[in-house]
Length: 83
Image (cartoon, rainbow, N blue to C red; front, side, top):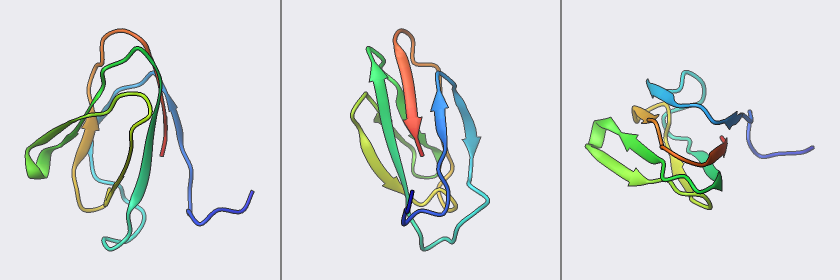
């Protein structure tokens, strides 16, 4: 289907090691959507020392090429991310 985004990833029940995205440009933002049920995931932005709640229903824009980011273990529940 038509999209303003150049790529789409669906990630299910996986942790994400700390990284910067290789694609895109530093001036572009990535939309991250956290879905699922019963999880208490945290979005870690190491460069700015932030650990943010990333519960189901959370949407955020970050510059993934600029900011180092990760999702660690979240305990119980199912987690699905559209990035």
